[in-house]
Picture 1 (spheres, rainbow, N blue to C red):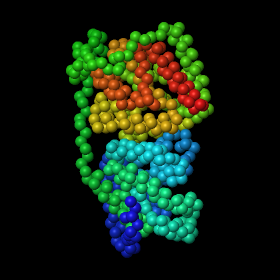
Picture 2 (cartoon, one colour):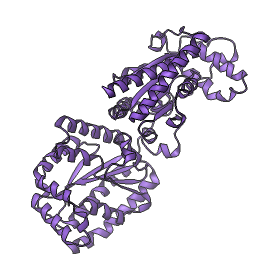
Picture 3 (spheres, helix red, strand yellow):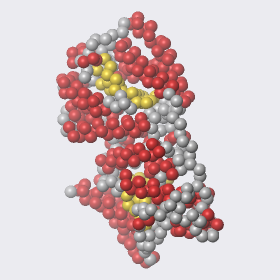
Length: 516
């Protein structure tokens, strides 16, 4: 695979001086166009053998490009803050926004390669890591990112010569470590793993360019030209047209107090909605009277309190996701969970429409940023499922965007669980009639009136569209390791006890597995 990167290609100093200035001007112009358009983020991964010129390449691009619109990240030993979160947290956190270029030195490729070279991981683990990388890069690319990956290569003898040269220069001597020499002694093993890596992650949406790294002039020009050509292609391509959003649903006629809508049994488009869905099959009559509720709630909160203290001591994190129709009782259920917890140990995030900063990133970016450290509890009042709920129903995401999101969400949740996070997903459901009753109660109650908006009334027109969307969510994202819990919410007392009990059950089971 690497034979073509061991041909000894060079660019003479005089030729470099002739080529470099106009090339730099072209890059600066394209970088400015990229920033002005705000259309896409550019991600450069600079990886390869020790001494192959990774650091020099990053330095060269930092010198040539406008630093205002450039993000550079190099990763060393994992910090304590990073160790307490899933591995990809630090990479998602560092992604450049649209309109900027991010340069990543080795990044998500470094640890899998070194661990495989030194037999820290086996073949199966390595292949799983490669699959995570492919999914990560594909997710970003499908969201519009331009991903370019450069592998800086040196032959065995060239690498030895390069390391010795760096050691002899007082300015670069400190850069060569015993680990670099140890990697060189494992050169054949390293190259074998690198070939596997490139073969499995060289995808059309995130291709590798193998660069001969012996001559710095040749290396710099090759990398810069590839970046220039890729930017020209993407920026000159027409921006894909987004279909217009669907017409807004009518405001629910039931608000005028005259009873059900005339089109009962039909959705806002007049299509029959009599098809049985998972939500329609729930026993919504389940309820608890007040004395039983008070007794059971105290019992379950006590269990949860004990379990969460054990989880905190063990460094076990939990993430709770709450979804459901407006007025379903998500907030009330969250408060009953929180009553059982140490206030210093949880954080509730109410998710609203994305900000401008969040719109400049992949939709999962803002959720990765909010992951808490080990032993803590993160609660999402609405979540990443907005992509396949409100964004789908309201037309804020295209069919392609929301359909591919099921796989992206499963990958995200798989990484959380692999890290040891206890993930619970609650859909708290109420019937249309119950929602209408709660809306009218909010209208009449001064301290609850603020919760009710015109948007809530309008959303009722999409009730059946949301039921269909929830069916798809359950089909595609209720996995063995991250199942959905459907909560019958017409009776708030029943729903609150079920939520607290489910969390206590799952947390106790996870702790038992950990201690086994």
